[in-house]
Image (cartoon, rainbow, N blue to C red):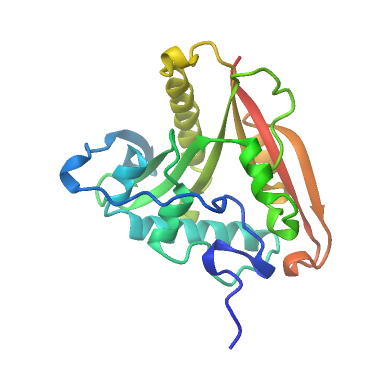
Length: 263
């Protein structure tokens, strides 16, 4: 019996798919229920006459949330739809288990996740998160990695040069495929951008106030490149993968983009 090429969040031939956690990133430990404060929730946008609620989670809060089983299935469907729409055959699951989702969220300092859910049922409809990006760690982890680095950024944004500049990464953004084009992705991206700037500003004596802040993303050009360009992201570099790569008839391009959140 052959092994599943998508196990452990890997694609065909062991290629890491977009947003996959770097090797060695820690899964949030399951804390005691009474040791964690509840996450902050507030009204989200109204979609087709139906009210939503948006919640901001820290990793420890997320690890205790009952929303994880339905959330990771939403992410699987969204990633499969995105890949199939541009001819990338994707027969497995983006996330194999609930614990794998938590591992890919990670627990490094600063990590957070927004989840927008239906107010009447609590079922998630969209999510996005962010964490601090460390180019040196990424380059060390993937040095000589070959195909495994296909979807992983290994360079800082063009223009990053001063000491103390903050670079954050938008990660694991997904919208229920039945409600794409309704403004949910834009809603979450605005929240993520604002939360990153707020957190950097709270660094206080560490020099957060006045730091230049960047956001980076990695995506498949044909699927989402134009979406991010319309939201002020610019291309840093792109890799081209020809016909036959990962079983695609036409091939595809992976673009690494960035934007300045605060100058």
